[in-house]
Image 1 (cartoon, protein in one colour):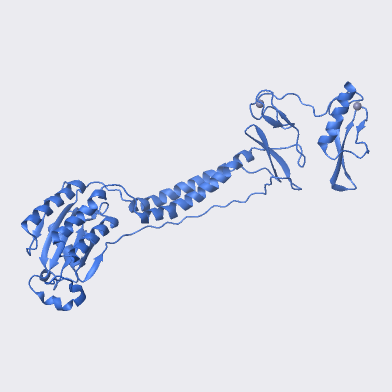
Image 2 (tube, rainbow, N blue to C red; image 1 turned 180 degrees about the vertical axis):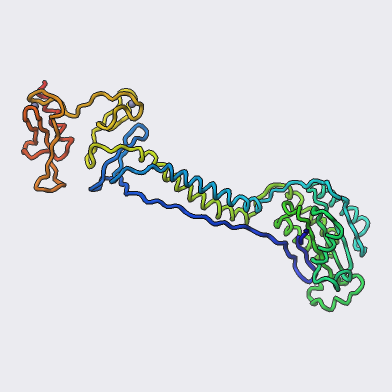
Length: 408
Ligand SMILES: [Zn+2]
Ligand SMILES: [Zn+2]
């Protein structure tokens, strides 16, 4: 069924057609994870993963969970959201397709009250033809006297509706009804003085656009309201514009852009709020989880608080942590046999029985002391004051230095 594209009258402004939107509802996603620190916290373990050939450490009481499932979930949520909101977006965007002209496309200009000159009718016809050629929509103009409908209809819109359905069997016309008072100028009394404007013979006029349903994708709210504004303004300024001028200029105003794709500013705002923000949210969450993919592949280090022994691969020069890899984590090459401690400077033996020992001085964990003991000969390498070294590295260094000195 056709519906109003808007209209107006001498005593009122223009009115727009109707426009509907859609709404959707969705849910969020949250996850809880164990604390991950960048520095050592008591009770946490040290984990190592590799990035750009270097070890990266984090501290947590358990390895970071793989975020792959969460990322897939977020991706599916974003996709469902896009699919759910796409029909509303498509409706809001202007995506015009020319209507096929396989219907009765004869253009009707029916001036029942002689308000159009012959020249005006010829010009109207040519503009209507151009519009039809471009859009596939057939414009029509019918002028009537107010007495034709005023006693039988509540408003010009109802009358224009009947005009449309009586004249056209299709839904591809755009009918303009113009009605004025040619026989009974008594209506002038009902009009406020200040609206009688400058021209001497006041006429009580109405106009209405009636568009078939098939024209909706082309004649959407943004274009009908542009058209209505031009027509109403020019009909109000009758000293400058004729009735035909108003409809011609209305069509010429919307013609250049009407068959082009466009996104109205209202739709842009809708897209930003209903697409940009949720997709940005899901996307941001997904991106924040990508870093966890590497973390979830981390290995627990042999030490928690102290930095573990690192070495570089002989083949790729990538740096790795000792004691947790069978082969280079960067290139897969076999790792050279590594011994943290040199041979015992006293018995010259090398092996598992040479160990790093530690104890708390005065029972205070923060004052841990280290030394090396050889299980083969019983030698203990300690600091000069016999209390041990403050770090494991220093103890190992001292042991190895002593071993090298003894070798020499
Ligand atoms: Zn390597
Ligand atoms: Zn020894």
